[in-house]
Length: 192
Image (cartoon, rainbow, N blue to C red; front, side, top):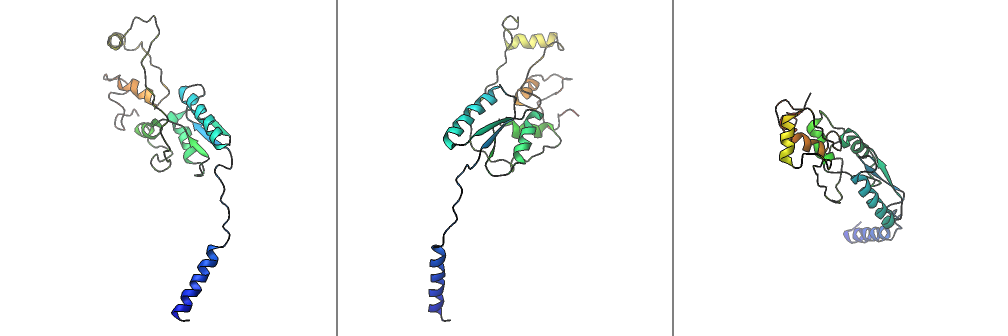
């Protein structure tokens, strides 16, 4: 076959292939989505996730099922999402602590934060606040520090859970020798 005939033959093959029917691609989403929240129902993250989920339902025309998976400093939920099919039907609604803090305090984490997740966007910012009941004589941080020094075993602090931002904020403010953390948590300071 000469060069001209080959060029014409290849051109016809391209023309025929270009006019061949292309299978229709499915329009996303074809089914409901799961929005995994690593905190219990009723908290700020859960409430915001439900608002976002409702808006996604409206815009996408498919149900968005909120699945609360608390525990393990968010690693239970993160593991579930990391092991789900990478098809866009399982979304993770979490703070950045799911990707940074567990690795700071655990020997191993059941997911690779850098490889197993694709960030979609920031929804908001959460400010941590240190509060007490109204009638407490402690009215500021200086008085709290003085009270903690005077009564080191009588104060308690509530947090979102072990290995969460609020947990570390409390521990980082408790930098006295002999405390659970002598400095802010790092792999070297992690209790064994």
